[in-house]
Image (cartoon, rainbow, N blue to C red; front, top):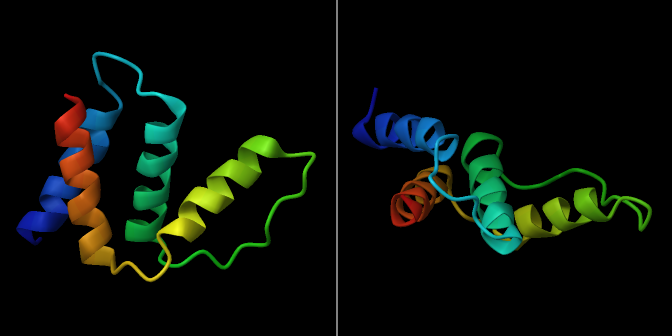
Length: 84
């Protein structure tokens, strides 16, 4: 396993044990980077106005479209590290 993959998996585990809950904007960034790192570009259908949470998640994930898996993992690791 690569060092980046191991660091990413550790950051994912650490994200569940943060001392303070991040604000909603940061949570969306965490979600988007995780999805980009594990799934890739967003190809899901955009949720409707009746689902504002799903829509916000979709928009956050779409905002990082084109970011490579390794780059998304690195950004995720750095973001979680800055929150600890």
